[in-house]
Length: 608
Image (spheres, helix red, strand yellow):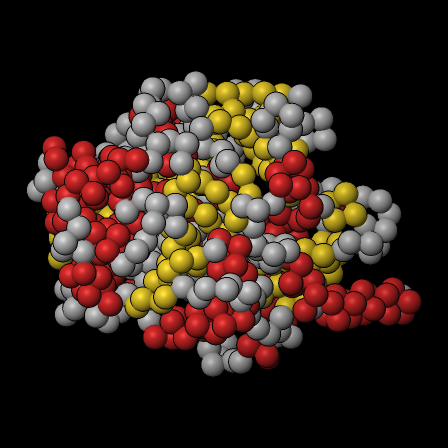
């Protein structure tokens, strides 16, 4: 076995909880801006620490007044918005436990969460969400159905008004009671496989992880930092960053419409971004398409190549003077414009959820935006390792964050333990027994290795290993990530379990396709159905697959593929809210497509 650990940088008092971060901010610098939010007219307005504290206190008193008890679980079903953080902290001030519910959740999923968490109250963003929640509650086995309050409307104002008789002393007693050992939230996994599991995260998970991360990322996250959150707040990644920024005194804005992200970045001018690889691929693709539309494709391609080569050379500590000159030239001509489209002040970004391709990481690094890849799970309160600036190495996901450790088991499985690790699955003692070793290590289900410096490299998912009929073990992630990095491709799913060779299902990016076709001198109005069999598209996809195949052995390479008419989406049930493939659902719904792939290949082989 291989082990690596990073000692804690800060001693965290056992009596701390997440609310102490806001107490400190409002006491020490009440005029510091913690949030920028849109008002009812759509204009951006600042919210200071003192103002946020006052709103949290008013809502917490309202919760106490209407009967919320310490330890009560309260659901929040909403898109990413300012009120998410507001309710999160109000619940913690009142001594309650918040339970996120994805806004895309079905009534059946809500019924399960309501039962398992024993919800006493649920906040719904819109009337549509409230209706789905009511349907779920009616289908649940709860004997006492929780009330549903709506974020949009008058319910929050009424809740604030109802708490005026609650004393400051009673609220402070509730707020200060929780320690690092106490439950802060139950986050239900998005369910790549099976029924969602309730991960119990403590105040200590958030407090220790936030303080240790701030110490480890000095100069990256602090009072001077700002970010725009657009990932789902129901997901642990955005949730952790939300708490992290309050701890650091940084400024957070929220956007619910990813299509408006570029405009919001221009308004907020963040210094730090949080995303998943698909977001950074979209930013790159947008820049490439704009260059193509302006007739500057050759210049853009040269700028990309220069950025990648400069980043690679910088990592080795040897940048030729000719490359330095070209990099400076393109910094003025190309990179500065891309940075401006992202607000002009972004220096760092955190990427997680799935691997970011090395070339894309080198490109952004060469542009002047260091993307810190991290590895983590809901069970580890988001990242447990990070490719931090002090030991930055593209192609790895870094060392354990302070207070955490990583072990590689004999079979290659990644095990973790430390201050970020959750306390266990709610109501699942048998699963907890399976998930933890006798000495406290958590089995992640991922496969990986450590490089010579102890940095983690993920090589696949244990449960997703494909075994061909010839007995070859294939990890699909490496091939899928390489294919998905292409401009025209949206998603790739590698298949071949029990089959004689590896194949893939490909979907196209509907936003990119018209511009791609126009650049080829083809009709940009060509339908997706026609594109699935278009010779130019098939040739291009084959070239992308050939390039991906170059990184694996012949036995692991993709031998056939099909292009699907419809993309995999969250709404179709084939992507999680954090944009990861739900492989079991895809394989179930596209079983006939996969069988056709191999039947056609067999027919072609017989004709030869």
